[in-house]
Image 1 (tube, helix red, strand yellow):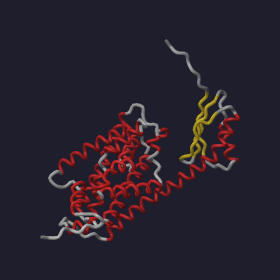
Image 2 (image 1 turned 45 degrees about the vertical axis):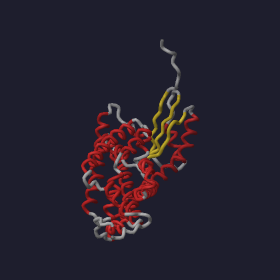
Image 3 (image 1 turned 180 degrees about the vertical axis):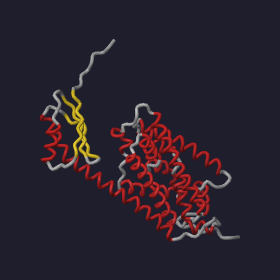
Image 4 (image 1 turned 135 degrees about the vertical axis):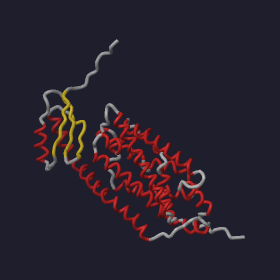
Length: 334
């Protein structure tokens, strides 16, 4: 009688079979798994697009739970560790094809929306078009949890939480909506967030699977294991560094904008109060101070604000929207 394959860090041959069956879309049930993947992803794209368009956090979270994109992403990491080139290419194909499906769904949803999406006031959009290094750090941590839950069947109940924590489908829906609205810079930002999350999951998934000795246990259990080259791991690490570069630039820009907002806000409030007006919104983006002020006639003088900003050393363009009038309650109409 042959000895059972040795377990490493608690991992057994049964765990290898479970992971391969769950992630690689192979075997007698492959057809059913593929159809379920595309149906669930298509529905998740619709739910996510609707949630983004209506600025509904609950709806977007529902789309995150339904979306099965985590499966082929982790499948890519598993195929990479096992050095199964065909499975890796197939898993990446599902990731790319699934991403295109959700983007197309968001684009179609935007085309059918008669009102249009006001991205400046939509928190679901704003939270996904300006990714920074903090998003990469969160994605690396979340990807680690996802891979850990994969190899440890006793903590697999955490996977729904991982699906919520990692943002996969919503950025794609935002990209589709922004492409339809010809907001290409915002679409790129949301795609960068998606790419960051995918890269982080693959990188951390690869690291966790290697740490748990998946290759050795798989080889001892008779599973197909190819030759894993060092340059393959180098490519994965390089991808993480590659996405970190634009994220660093984005983080620097966000910090600069927040500092400029902190400097401009008291100047703008002082200008508005002096004329009996009120600043309702002030932010800095695209190299300009953008301000919305509300007050009674006559209109406030924006040139005076321009001069005050210059005196304060705030050398940014100024965009002012004045809302003339006030608020009053009308009598009920019987």
